[in-house]
Length: 383
Ligand code: SF4
Image 1: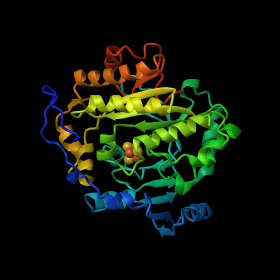
Image 2: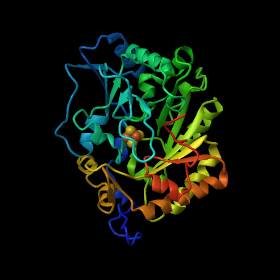
Image 3: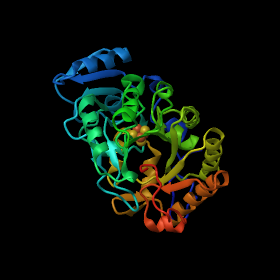
Image 4: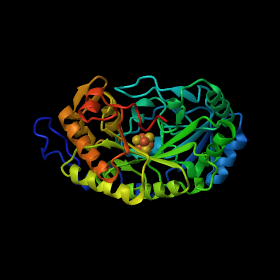
């Protein structure tokens, strides 16, 4: 079912649909490995670690003088140039930083940046805008600096609710874990060296087999972002299918990890109601999530030009034109998003009436209209 623009007044308008032949990628491109080439910066101190990653990945290392900036490509060639490669480098800025601009009731959570930019190709990805001048997918390999910062964080007086380091704010932390093997190093590090801190992996990958037998000490939360099959097929290129993600969720739950889910971005299209209900039916076939956080499609002003540079036929460009401006974001009109959230929450509650359901980066009046969160914040990014 094609994704359509929404008209704030007549929400069921049926033009501007996107058809299969307009998809931005070809089956051949989806079959390419997520990482075609592995690059490293010549000046890094830990060349051995870069070589170990290359050996694990079975890829030759290509040494560069400096990180590549923007390229002149457009369309799918641009995405391939930026996100078909993985750059290994050392991070000079802090690995742990506090989220600076909370929206609505959002907490000032902490993020841990081990990986920038992602190798998946979601058309709505806000990182095209965030990393507009440094758009190449990057993994930071000076783990010792990161470990020092984690230990300091663990010993700090940070309140318990914020003692979660979010690895999924600036990339999908499991997208290239089959290349880096990073999760298998950091997950057991926590119970040994940072017993009061938890990690949050937010992912659209199903690549979890390597973490199933690790000593995680209950300190790593695996949160799967899921969506309808239509959104997956049209917009979340090269990710695992929603059902594969749920299968992976069942595996990690069996291995004792806390499992959370995100349904985000919720997108309006003609069969959205039926499709999101079917998604929730599917969720509860596989897992009992600890909490579910939901959010609507809400592009930042300015993201549109970065989407069109990469996906000139994207259905989102038409959707964007019919959204309303709220602060620095474009959003669905309030009455429509309350309706979408209400439908999804009611379906979730039929399965598990006491489950924590939260909204992501949403205004207090929307929380209130839905009767949510009156007893404190229990969303994806906090304890
Ligand atoms: S998985 Fe997340 S970070 Fe990766 S491309 Fe999709 S939206 Fe961006």
